Image 1 (cartoon, helix red, strand yellow):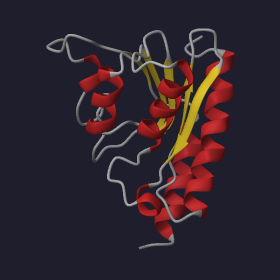
Image 2 (cartoon, rainbow, N blue to C red):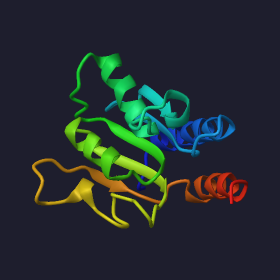
Image 3 (spheres, rainbow, N blue to C red):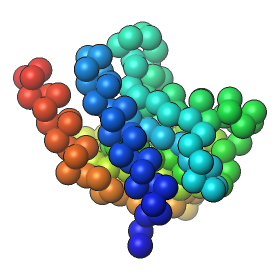
Image 4 (cartoon, rainbow, N blue to C red):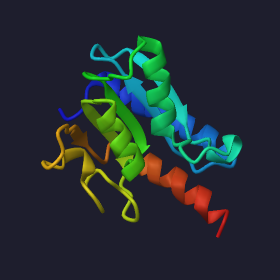
Length: 153
């Protein structure tokens, strides 16, 4: 078993958040932060267009919510569940926050930083690394992305 039942439930929730992002005109990416016990600590979806914030990626929004919930920037022993492979910024933020595990859906062959283009999360040159599980809920995540971009091309 690669994922836990809590991670599978979090991916289902992240997919709903991604659909909400798409409905708001944002790239459809959703994220859920889980504590060591599988409890949801924070959720997020892309909101760059709405907030005019270049860091408004689902992962960053979810990590901020989780940090507020526990009262610390240190998210050690947490899991980030996200519908799309994190970019370099989000992977770096996850490492800075000490996120222990990242579970994602769709691979990003243009800007992914969890194994496709870069492998920031597992880079042995860095002082902190995270476990990575990719391709979870991939078909649903890809379908959301394809539908979103089909309407814009």
